[in-house]
Image (cartoon, rainbow, N blue to C red; front, top):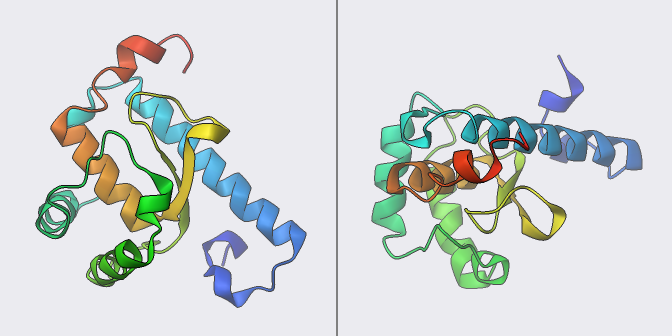
Length: 147
């Protein structure tokens, strides 16, 4: 079993383990952003459960502005309670609780000032919404030569 595929709570917070998790999150962010810059985001399917993830997300968070995510609001006590209930609905998904980087501003690239650490299902919910609602559409034109 690959050490990076095991849940983080199985490990003590050793620097090497933290660096491995961080590297995996950065690699995922880079691959995903390059994908967004290469294909029509509306055509992307991130999981076999995209429809369910999106439908339940918009039922649970109908007014969440996915174009621009405020980290303090996202991680507030009230929002954490709502997100925990949402996350629990998708524990069937592989890696649903893994740490994943999310772009705060949908129209910007992955840079340290535009990255929020979230669990994978939050990333999927927000990015599927961005793809379907058109917020990632500008990326191919804007960053095509950078990817």
